[in-house]
Image 1 (cartoon, rainbow, N blue to C red):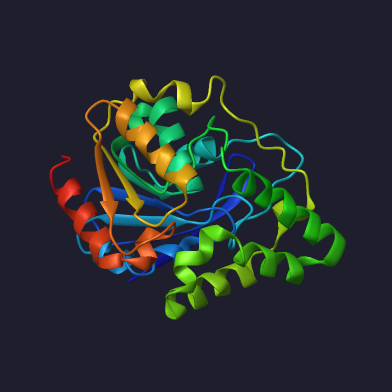
Image 2: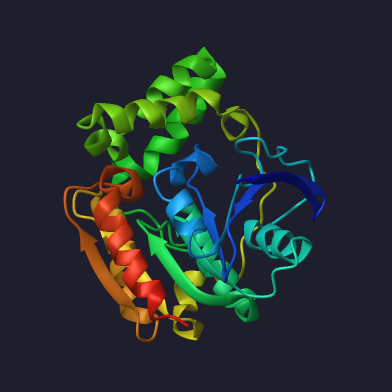
Amino acid sequence: MHMPGFAHVNGTRLYYEAAGSGHPLVLIHPTGLDRRLWDDHFEALASRYRAIRYDVRGFGRSDPPSDEPYRHADDLKALLDDLGVSQAHVMGLCLGGGIAIDLAIHHPQKVTALVVADVRLPGYELQDPEAAQAYADVRRVARESGLEAARECWLARAIFAPARGKPDVFARLAEMVADYSGWHWTHDDPITQFSPPALQRLHEIGAPTLVLVGEHDLPDWKRMCEIVARNVPGARHVVLPDAGHFACMENPAAFSEAVRGFLADAL
């Protein structure tokens, strides 16, 4: 049974769903998507844990940012506090992985285990010019041609290429993108970053850490995962076959197997 709700925290309103009992496990989605990224895993995880998934500020059913500066990791910490969660396993993909890492660095008492997949590492500058330019291109299209054109531009990015080879997965991703408000494409986001960024502080992470990456993800994301695995003490690094950037959807069985085994040993 899902227990949905809105948490009024940190000057915003975050939508979340919780299910199950046991040790808390929070799931964090990437940019432009929402909590449904975890549909293949949520029920199974809720059979073992108190599973919590939420829409990051500005995505899904959560409120968009205001003019006030904020940080996603602080939002997550406030959400966990509001839900009475003193400690949790934390799992995120891409942006969600970066949020999880920031939480582990800046609120380490909250994190009992860390799982990051195809992570967007705060502080890392993309090396591939096409990847670095892609987000700016989507913003330009949104402002010049509207949100529908921007959504098409977003889904045409190379990062979605492996998913395009799996029509059922791509259809679900496209549905989430269609439901995304596009706020970040048409507004200047007042988000602030930690200084120094996580890239320079990975060695401080004390929680057991699993780093997952799809074998077909883009080189920059493979590189970010390698950096995390190399610099977080004791981190495990697993390359998932037959998966690209959205590994938890593109090969859910391999993703689930890796996570299940890791978390079973984490406490």
